[in-house]
Amino acid sequence: MCGIVAYIGHRDATPILLEGLKRLEYRGYDSAGIAVLQGEDGTTLDQVKSVGRVRVLEDAINAHGGLPGSIGIAHTRWATHGGVTQANAHPHHDDVNLGHGIAIIHNGIIENYQSLRIWLTEKGHVFSSETDTEVLVHLIGELYHGDLEKAVQSALREVEGAYAIAVICKKEPGVMVVARKGSPLLVGIGKDEYVVASDQSAIVAHTNQAFALDDYTVAKLTRDSFRTTTVDDIEVTAEVYKLELEIEQIELGNYKHYMLKEIFEQPRALRTCIQGRIDHRAGQVVLGGVNEFGRDLARAKRIVFVGQGTALNAAMIGEYLMEDLAKIPTDVEFASEFRYRNPIVEEGTVVIAISQSGETADTLAAMKEARQKGAMGLGVVNVVGSTISRETDAGVYLRVGPEIGVASTKAFVGQVMVSALLATFIGRRRFLSQDQVTTLLDEMTAIPGKIERVLEQSDSIRDATSRFVGRENWLFLGRGVNYPVAMEGALKLKEISYIHAEGMPAAEMKHGPIALIDDGMPVVFIATRNSQYDKVISNIEEVRSRGGHVIAVATEGDKDIARLCEAVFYVPDVIEPLQPLVSVIPLQLLAYHAAVLRGKDVDKPRNLAKSVTVE
Ligand code: AGP
Figure 1 (tube, rainbow, N blue to C red):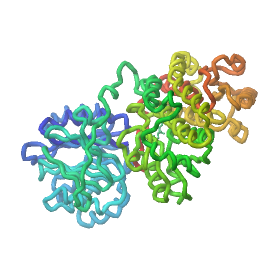
Figure 2: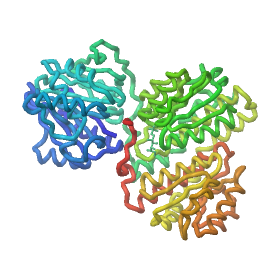
Figure 3: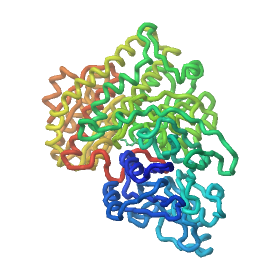
Figure 4: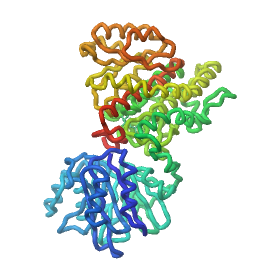
């Protein structure tokens, strides 16, 4: 997803902007650019744009002779409208002849840009790109009458869609106007300076005081002040809060990739996730964010999880956990489908939005749709202060630390652990006995140590993976709570190694996909000891009899299964509801090693964004 960084202050803007863009590279992008106001009177606006990585932009700026100035805007573009070209890269400018030297960077989609473009063209505007963003800045230019803040407000009242923007104008050298609807934007407050960015990772090097813009909010920044209003110029109060992120948390350290770092961080991440939330003495779960809703949750008639991608896979495990432990009818929905289906939301419905970033547009919209129909909304989110976390009635933060790798790993296990904590919290208020809860809490507490034992097998998992990495089609199969793990294993492999992989319930294979199995096809089974183990073994036999090569995730001590498999990744024994927390680990490592062996860009896989803030 696009990255936005902007600076207004007394320091040289370009180094700050470039460092900020590098902090946002993990979001996924294909081009980049910077525009800077120059001279104390700001009478010139200079810029450099380039296709490719930020380092290409850095080289282009050096070749350009630098970009001096203390007010600037910078952008990494993830193409939505228009191809990956230098012309389409941001920043964009208003009309060369009719304009006022206005530059903009934008994250989001202006849905009515075509009609606006026609109207502006009829007024003589000439466009140089295919983007919706350029239409927006031409509209601002058309509505500019000497006050940039007012021109931005007027223009935003005319547009439909999502935006996070930063705008500067050479006629107003000491001013920057920023605004947001649907795409996140934070304003970091420094000493006589502000750093604006799509997320906190580009701000924390400069300040830990910030405010997040709400939808339809506009902020006018000068070097020593800011003013926040609605798009109708009604003053609103900005809620300043402390950013929790420490810069060390987002450093790569001694790891080759963020994804590998975050895979190995999972034991520590889960210890932080459960810290203070398991009271062994009282034998109960303590969730400050939802405690006051305990009675309402215990009386819920239906629970609906909504999410996308990995978060949806975690939600599928949440469904099993809620029905098993809380005994409440539970569904899982693609957020993107739920939001448009005019869903039936009856009294007593609780919707749980699962999201690492807390900014996924479809998940946010699904949550809003459900709450609008009367549901209680809970958020299971990692990023503190993110939009979803601010749009719910209550929630539980993952507390697994910032996740930089595009392929989600520690957030997934955090989402599953929080779902287990929630299910136990509710279950104890319904039918779970104290002994059952005590067992669950002991098992949850033991999980990080058990994951550590799986991580020790990373090299052997790499060696096994190397034997199959040339195969272009894989199946991932599991039953019960391990069926979503099969989905997650397939997604991991797809998104970073570009191998085609499909996850499904093991029994479903016989209803068509078994036709895919040919000699040597890798088929990964999650075959840990549990209530459906024997049925999984039967499925393994069916695959083997058709020439498939079986890779199994099995329980330590299960020697029998080895005779059926080309490779076995052993995990410690865990009670069935919590098995996904360990059975997913070998699959994360498998995907990681496959991508490295295939020479792929593990942390910035092609076409992908870390947070999909557009529909
Ligand atoms: C998972 O590895 C992907 N990066 C992607 O599927 C992701 O899980 C999905 O876009 C949801 O993101 P969220 O958790 O930030 O809402």
